[in-house]
Image (cartoon, rainbow over all chains, first blue to last red; front, side):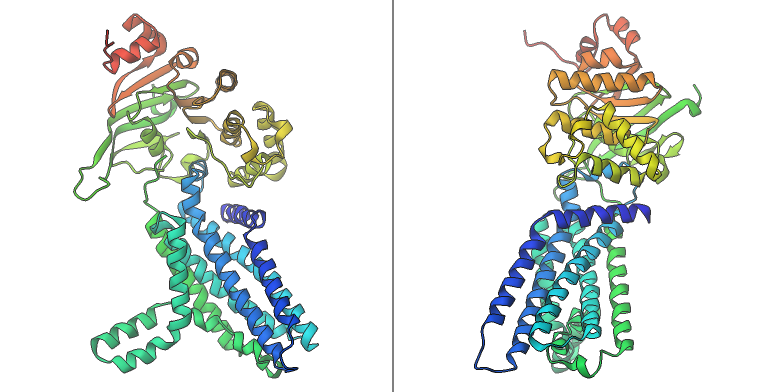
Length: 262
Length: 252
């Protein structure tokens, strides 16, 4: 665990010493404030549009941070040869993978806290109301979702050599799942036969990232009358953690015997 | 010499790299290598480019899996993690995390070796003093010159006070002053009784500091023995011995 934490610490340090996070945060803040400064037809529901826009930007920014940060971890270590003095020390490849995962995931968590704090501040300034329980649930599910994304990208980074191709492929896969994942079972019912079975299989195999997107819940104030049922929340958490562990296991299987040449 | 005194032991080592293209035959990098490095000696591992020196070091460090044969460090199979607890490694080209400064980098590596916190700071101070980087310890590594980066490499290799140092061309690309400093450090480590296993193309330097050498050519061990014996046997300096063994014919 000591090695894993040491590796995670370096990843977090890298994130806050690079400019990516600051650029995305400033961009989100500026766009949200610009949206907030416009008053459409004196319509009260405009606050909802503002919240929706802000959350969409937070989701996009967090996915960009998670994918780009994770995609460069192992390929960059190999490219810059920092992996050699590291693995010449008593660090196993499994520890390297878990350390990188933990570092990227925690770094995403820190970024999310900043983003959601900003979101809360914007909402409170307009609605004069807070729902910390709901924001916490949304943030937590968002973070669990990013855990799956980070594990998926880490797997991609030991399969694809170039960080850019890995990041692009992972971004397309994640977006594909988020937009189409929930509709696959319906499509399978319409198709029927062997094709339907294949689509059904895909539906049950892919990680359902769309379950973690509770933007509608937050935007339409459902949280003011009640939170997401804690059982559903815990189930989604467990599902996300199990999926992340499974993806990390596959990553280790691919990476454990890989020849690393200086 | 019994096995306990052998810090590094390589038996019938064979390493093949798979062909990069479809149906391309595997490339033989090391072929039936047998080698022992004894405790407290400075061992020079020589050979022309592509001879298999780095591959052998990669096997010792667990980066590459042997096709057949065995290798052990301090009697422990190199595939086991514990084998790396008492070694320090300096790669041929040193690149470290550019967003860290030397102190942070050394603290990170010290943590991996589970060095207790107060001892960790003392070790960092000691190695920085040894490699003469105390004054720039808080500067980001990316701002260092090549020679300074090489000394960072040496510092990280020494952070755990290793009993065995594996150095892959430690003076490559350094100016004469940098080379002399690295040589001085190796000499100091030798005086402290450390075992040093290093590859180099600087034969004059090898002749000065090594107790024994092995010359590898096309993946096979050609000759091994004390530097003085080889020089006497081939009636010339180490460069002469090297050129003779690799079959160099002057064009004139």
